[in-house]
Length: 52
View: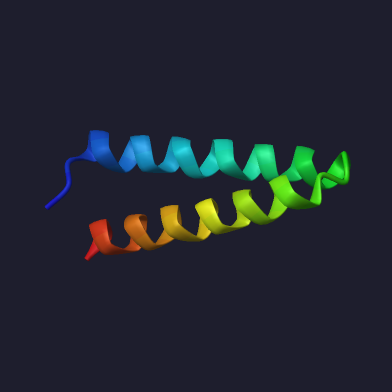
């Protein structure tokens, strides 16, 4: 089972990816946007796996 610290780190990574994705969309950086969407999806998979 993951510790609370690991959950906090995952939450922070997801938050940072979300913010970066919003900025990429604002700046119309489509390649970066696609990369960040993939990274965010992977981070959410890791988070969900850690919660179970």
